[in-house]
Image (cartoon, rainbow, N blue to C red; front, side, top):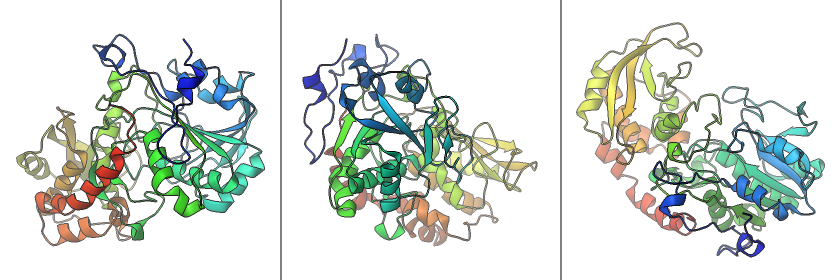
Length: 422
């Protein structure tokens, strides 16, 4: 049954924002194993209403291979085949529209052979150059639909931010089709970015595990950050999901998982990524080149002492198995790496960022070969030099995680204003 126009255009509290309301989040509609129905994404609700939100608009879609329907069709292909949508362009980001390149790469500009639509590369573009790209593409409205991983340093949420700023500069409308946070979104965890350390893996001060959906992030961006950069908020509509409750993990949604980037293999990867992604700031292996990236960590010469020390830390919700592996690509390709594998046994108790800090602390204490990357990439990942300098000074897990509690409490207060799901 189509959602009514009145419900679709319920006015939100933030300036320049028009969020779409969803039905009550009853147990039967929760998408959990005990529920009668699955989650409906923002795209499904937009399509169910006959795309009326896009009436008369020339549309560009910002998406990748994770922008799919519940029956695994690409949203671009579905929209392109529907005469009610004037689809004019597709915009790709890091890893591209089809998701073929590895980290730090994109696909460039080309014509999509399936739809015949022009595909424009937004990777490493922002501000006025990106606004000019939207003008050149001849679109009136930008539609964003991409699966997030729940961590501040996952670049898709900063493509969202950059595109919102550029759309404000270019005078375009912006629509976000919401999808679940695969880590559940119960709460925010970890340090908050310091503005002096803003990069493409963190443009604005949000927590390392933000605990929000992309739709909620868009509302926060538009209310807190976009006007100060672009001079105005962007005309924004968030098409909310129905049936998703804060705290529901991805396997409770009934939706198919497509890796939104080559190494975000499963929802299990996303669950740990906000913590173990910090190992990209070390010289160790973060599991790329294995079937369990970010769940397998190690280095050449490491042995079982690290797993024993990690288990002795008594971290809630997770066990560590001594593990050995040989990556298929990367610096340790073809060589034996020793380390550990994370096994999360209680997702509700698991804190990914605290776990990541504990693993950094125990790795440094048990292995004399531990080192940060020379470019201090860890500071960009964590949003300041604090984690690196405190661990180097001998601080323990409690001391490091305690150092960011005041800023995290302040972020949580801001975050609550933009949450749209129970």
